[in-house]
Image (cartoon, rainbow, N blue to C red; front, side, top):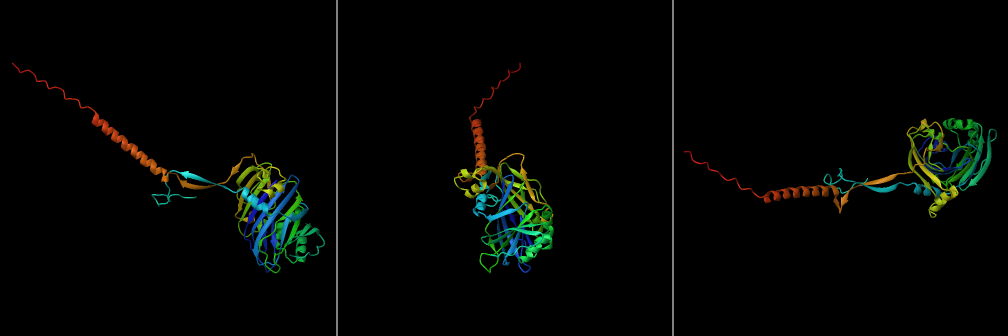
Length: 365
């Protein structure tokens, strides 16, 4: 199963929450996570996440913390995957006609139609174990096994960052579940410049016995959050619950074979191994992020019912450029006039019967 997600927000705070992680900068810097895009795959035992951030701010670097249920491997991802999935699930445009004129149509208003580079640092001792360290493009990636949020705080300090109190509190449930972390030190492409723009995607792989999309850290967000999940599985998928947000809305559902699309989706084909999948696109809003109380778990829906969002453009129905309603009224008027004329002609042609003869009574005698 694969999940594609989009998390939007502009989060100016000590820790910058995003859908599956949190950003940490130094005390004097600011950064906003404009867009986070993630692709998550699960085959029943192994989960993979390909994620890409778009950020802006004045921070010279930042640390991004991602909780994972088991030890992860990290590599660079394929950026073209995101545009392929966006194209695949885009709404279909269609025209929908209406008969009677509306407010923007003649004769009301005269309108004819309406439309609708950071260096590696030494690992911390004690309850934080650095189980791996890689340099991937502009990223310095550390894979951590931590048994206490205070231990993660120690590692961050050794790397030049501070762990905000509320982030430490938000991480505690993951520590209690014995999850690990991927800690990534982000650096701008141009040395000495601010961390800004769309970053290269990262691909994480780890063992998982159920499909989980980490959302708990999003409760740190200071503004409403918007989440989009694109789920690729054997069947149509749905979240098990709302986890503190509004009811999820399905915007696309259908079976897709990327290999048969004439090479249109090569990155998706590589990710799915050439196997047909059922794509489910889900949107969800979180007006009050502080109410988020867990991570998204996904399950198969009751039926593989296909669905696609239609982008309708409403147009007034016309015939030969003339409004159909006007032609109908004119046609009706012609029929009525013709009927009256026919009745009048028939009345004129009807023969007039002569009056009965006058009978004169005989004179009286």
